[in-house]
Amino acid sequence: MKQEPLKTLLPKFIENLSQKGRSPATILAYRADLEQLVDFLLKKDKVLPDQIRHPDLEAFRDALLAEKYTPKSVSRKLNAVKTFFRWLISENHIIADPSVGVAHPKIEPTLPKFLSQLEYRALRDVVRNDIRIATIVEIILQSGMRISEVANLKLANLKGDVIKIDAYATQPERIIPLNKPAREALKLYLAVRPKSDSRFVFVSKNGKPLAVRNIRAAIDRYMQKAEIPSYSVNDLRTTFIVENLKAGVDLVLLSQVVGHKRLSTTERYLELAGVKEPGKRQALAEL
Image 1 (cartoon, helix red, strand yellow):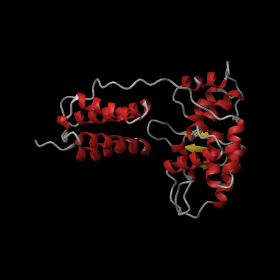
Image 2 (cartoon, rainbow, N blue to C red):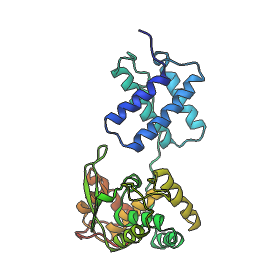
Image 3 (tube, rainbow, N blue to C red):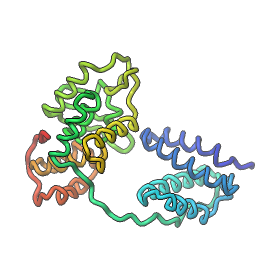
Image 4 (cartoon, rainbow, N blue to C red):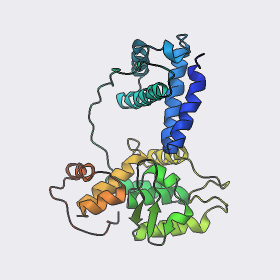
């Protein structure tokens, strides 16, 4: 049987991910990472799956590191590569997996970063005239939502004083209570939200849903203006967790709100927050 080239197998793999219910962000990342692999292999005249050998994938890893990709980014790309080759075996396109034994680069553990009160207040100051992005910043600071969850938030998920996060990928449905600052920020934004038939909360001036990359780029831009360029949007979520631990919020409640699958994941933030014993408070803090 004639073998299909990698370039035509890749879209079929991506479709398989979609059928399995993987998140749009994961699918987008896998596609980009594997297109990068396929381009690398084509330059070496490796077109068919059974032409790929273990050293080819090690060379891909080493080339990424030489191009100054971080070990964490390279490790993520290798996860996509390994998943792709497991799929090729499951679909009988190859009989041996060349990705087995391709080692991940060593990643030095780093502590998550969080903003001080002065820093997140400075961010609020520079973003206040951009009501849409100001609301997104406030929602993450007050609820700990992930940026992908903000981008995918639908009008139907706004339930008065709570937000419902629909189940996605391996994340179950969860309910996030909204404190007063979060509710007020949403109310202000919804009053000026562009008229649109879109079911999504956050839309562009043309009524199109805001993509994760657009939200990230906008917040990065305001971080620069606030003179806190070393932070990213993900650090706002960490700030929420740290400030709530400092305020004595119950660990189980906080773990449920942020969507951690294991309580031990939330417990790791205690040291970062400088908290020895978790509190029992049953209401989220107001940042």
